[in-house]
Amino acid sequence: MKANKTEQRVLIGNVFPFSLVRCKRLIVESEAISTLRAVLAGGAGVASFWGHENTRAAAEAVLGVSLAPRTERPALTLSPGKCPMLDGEVFDVCWLLSPDYPEGFRPAIGEEVSPDQIAGWHVLKLTWQ
Image (cartoon, rainbow, N blue to C red):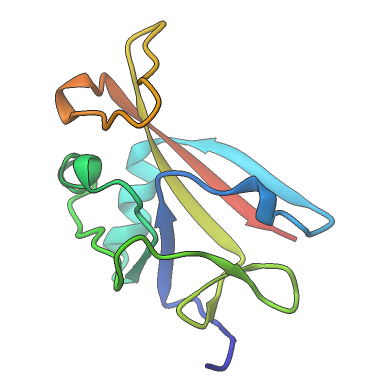
C-alpha cells in the first residue's frame, strides 16, 4: 500500500507508543477537549487506532464521533519520513484522548478499566516536524 500523507482524516488513539518516535522533533501539547471536538466537527474523517474496547464507548460519548478502528487492535507503523502511518496513510499530527483516573488509582496488570472508573479525559496533540 502506498504511503500518502493525508489531511482529510484525523489520527486518534488513547495512547501513542513512544518507541515509534524516531524524528528529530516531536511537539506534545496539552489541548482542551473542545479543541479536539472542533477539529472533528470540521468534517474530517477519523483514522482510529483506539486499542481498548472497554473505554471506547465512553470516549465516543465525550467526542461525539465513532472511534471504531478499521481493524481490531490496529498497529501504527512509521513512514519512510518517520511519521506515524495507519492503513497506508501518513500523518504529521496525532491526537490522544486519555482517561483520567482518581488520584493514586492504577489498574492491576491485565485488568481492564471500566468506564465508571474514569474520572475525566485529557487531550494531547502530537505534531511531527
